[in-house]
Each structure stands twice: as C-alpha cells, then as structure tokens.
Length: 222
Length: 298
Ligand SMILES: Nc1ncnc2c1ncn2[C@@H]1O[C@H](COP(=O)(O)OP(=O)(O)OP(=O)(O)O)[C@@H](O)[C@H]1O
Ligand SMILES: [Mg+2]
Image (cartoon, rainbow over all chains, first blue to last red; front, side):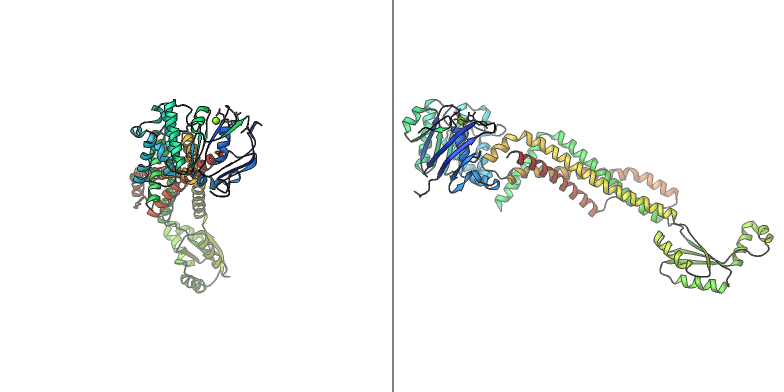
C-alpha cells in the first residue's frame, strides 16, 4: 500500500546482558496486511525479534521502525500508546490467575478507557471467536493448556489491533485446534490485520503458505 | 466524563479489593497511623488548653517603682501620667506616710515607732493590662527613665518561664508532626510495596498491553490516601476520646481552684487540617512506593 513498509528492521543486533547475541544483523521489511511466519529452532531468536518489534526489548544496534516510529528510541511515556496498537500473544501466556476469563479479556479495553456495556459486548465477541464464551466466569487456572492459549488470543484481539504478534500461538494445541486458530488468524488477515506468527510447526506453514522468515542462531537464513 | 468517572470508580474498586485481601493487616496499619497522628495532635490540644488555663489565672505581674526623696506631688504626677498609658490597667500610689501606716496596721507598730524617721520611699505599683514579658519590661524601662525614680522591680521570671515552656511545647509539636509525618508516609509506602509485590504479574501484563504509569499508579494512590484518611480519623478519635477521659478530672481540679475550666478539643478547621494532612501523607507514601516499582520495572 504505502511506500514505506509497516515494519522496517534494519541491521538489528540484540545482545542480552551477559553477552549472548540473540540476533545478529537482521534486516527485514513487513508490509501492511502481510501474514508472516517466523520459524527456526528453539533459541533461534524468534521471541526476541517479536519483543523488539513490540518495544519490550531494545536493539543493541540497528533500528526498527514500526508505523513510522523508531521503536528502539521510543520514550517511556509513548510506549503504552504504541503498544495499544499491537495485539500480543505471549509464548508464556501471561494470563492473570486472580481474575476471571472475562476480566482477563476486559483488561486491554479497560486500559484504553472502554467501559460498561460496550466493553462487555466486545469481550464476549472476542471470547466467542475463540470458543470460550461459556467459560467467561471461570478462572484461567481451571482451563486446559489449549484453552489458555485461546484466552490469550482473545485478549490480544479484543481491542482490534492492526498488528498482531503471536509467539507460538499453536504450541499447546492439537491439530484440530491449531487449524481453528490459524483459520481465525487468516480471517483477521483478510480484513487487513498484519500478523507475525512464530512457530515450529512446518506443516502448518506449508498448509497456510504465507511468507516465511527463518532464523538460525540469531541469523536470518531465509 | 463518564469514562473518567468509571476509571476512578474502578481504581476505588481495586483499592477496596486490596483492603478485602488483607483487612486485619490494613486495620492494624490504620491503628498505627492513628496513634502516630494522635501524638502531635494530642500534644497540640494539651498545649492550647494549658495556654488558656495560664491566661485564666491572671498572673499578678506588677511593676513596682520606689522613688528617691522627692515631693509627694512629683511622685503623684508620674502616677497620673502612667495611668493614661495604654498598656496600664491600674496604678496604685503608696506614699511615705501610707507605707508607715500599713506597717503599723500589719502589727509592726513597734518597729515603725522604733525608726528615727520614716525610711520608706513613695511607691508606685503598676499593673499592666497584659502580663507579657515584653510589656512588663517596656513599662519598667519607661518608669526607670524618670529621674525621680530610685529603683524599679519587675517580676517577669515565671511569665518568661511559662512562655519558654509553651514555645518548647510548640517546637515539640512541630518536630512530632515532621517525624511522625515521615513515619506515616513510610508506613504507607511499606504497605503499598507489599501490595505491589503481590500484584507484580498484573502490573507487568498491564504495562505490556499498554497501561500508562498513571493507570497503574492510581489504585495504589487511592489506597494510600484512604488509608491515611482512615488513620487520621482514628487519631482524631483518639484525641477526642482522650479529652473525654480527662474532662471529669480536669473539672475537679478546676473546681478545687474555684474556677470553671472546660477542656477544648480540636476545632473544625484544625480537624480538617489533620485529616487533609494524613490523607496527603498516605497518598505521598503510595506515590513513592509505586514510583520506585515503576522505575525498577524499566
Ligand atoms: N532475557 C534474556 N536474557 C538473556 N538471554 C536471553 C534472554 N531471552 C532470550 N535469551 C537468549 O536469547 C536466545 C534467543 O532466545 P529466544 O527466546 O528469542 O528464542 P526462541 O527462538 O523464541 O526460542 P523458543 O522457540 O524456544 O521459544 C536464546 O539463546 C536465549 O537463551
Ligand atoms: Mg520463543
């Protein structure tokens, strides 16, 4: 669409404190509306790359431009507003076990000042999409691994972000559920949402045939 | 506007949940804050009552002036001019002969008779309108300026002592307010620190999905402020209860001195200030605690 890609990663290196280089000299452009699979062995740097895009980690060198904003240099007060445009699905879920399924999904809306019936309606729509509508009062701890994963997805999409970063969203799911979720992602993609999905599952990528970026030991191999 | 209100209500709800999570600990903290508040407030009230009581005793502070060997008319003239002075309530003139008569009527007639001639000077006894050390001393200085006056006696010592004691008391109240104010803020900061510790996950997730520092901070500020307010109320109640307890015995003491003395508590503005201050300090303590946690969170 536009001349500049939605996400532009140029010569990015990330070295964690302690000296481990998780990413070396990565350059990558992702257009608005793309669906990109990020793949590679465990420890290849997939999560690190997603964290850099969401400004959860900062690059050691190089720069990352998202939506025209230099993410690596973003000032602290700007971060929350930047993150509201991104739906984050974490590898470790990061669900809150002291509140209900409903309240977990409500959180992003609340933070953005959406409240009352409007918020409740949107929470239920998101829960419906991931098939958890009948569990809205349950505590996340009582959900199965796959259900927790879907809850995490519901929380990521409830505020209708234009960009979704999904870190191994199908890792704990059996084939049927993994396919359900991938179908869901494709449906988002069809309405214009940009998605970056990290996964080990080569079959899945083969089946959905989006663009594939492969990392190995922090280097981009394809 | 509606969203704003809902936001604040939500923060209040979270603060209430924090209370429900640890009611006993919170009530205990409130009690501790109450005691911390009641110390300076109680001392302040005590001091106010003492000052009032001291004022009611009407100190017999006088300036006494002894004249040189001068005519009675001259001495009376000074008495007359002093009477017109604003600070002066009463001037009594005791002439040489009056002095001797007093001596005689006091049963010392033999002593008086044994004297070769009347050795007593004309004397002035001046009572000031207000018995402050400053007024007494300026009066004494003014009288001493008169060349006919031999000697002036002022007894300001006990008034000075009282004033110094009152000042000491006021300084002590000020010091207690500062020290216990810091303690109040620190107690609150510690409570909030524990809450933050228990809420670490929720705070982390909130930040990851776009919560501002203000959003994260607000429920804790509410909690700190409300806890401070509750502690202030507890302290206020302690002071009032203490006053009630002492009231009967104070009345007895006053009656023994043949006077009525009513123990005063805290006035409405004073009570308001106390509650405002304890709320603000609780809020401040919470602000520091959350600020530290947010900075550490990167
Ligand atoms: N916070 C951190 N501090 C230090 N090293 C880290 C940190 N996070 C990741 N690493 C290291 O960086 C490398 C890349 O980690 P990353 O989590 O990005 O891998 P990944 O591709 O997501 O792996 P997986 O498929 O197992 O999730 C790993 O060697 C990891 O040990
Ligand atoms: Mg990972």
